[in-house]
Length: 202
Image (cartoon, rainbow, N blue to C red; front, side):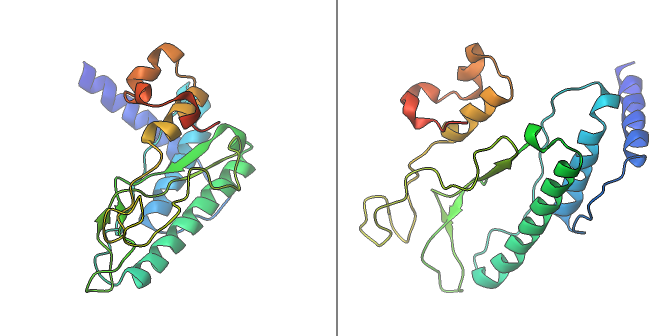
């Protein structure tokens, strides 16, 4: 019974999305196609009977152990074009103020290159957050006072210790998404390790 119900819902969703179009042309890339589907899903929220969604997209190729500069130029160009298309589509649909897009990575890259003109795995990195309700146009967090070897946050080869936690970003995002304060500890289990001013103001 559960399988039949699941297949039925899947067919309904497929048929619904087939009838949806976008006003903006998305890049024909893995990321661009994913964000186009997300845009259609948001456009189908009334038919699906939902007032809030969480979507996950991914794109690879960032493990640039060789030829980092050439590879990253192409990767960043794809992200830039795909994010712009998605933002433009949300604005046309008049829902941009209700949408937040956040880019994260599970690790960063070394600031110094390896022998193959690439970079290796590191720790502290950067996020991008954008949306109609986001206080954009700014860099938040604490920029390191020094980047050279021996600097306080450099533990070797440009592996920087992060100054902000995942919770600093995701707690205000969870609050914005309507998570009850009683559940903050479940959503952000390390919340109690930081002072109140550690978390970004949404």
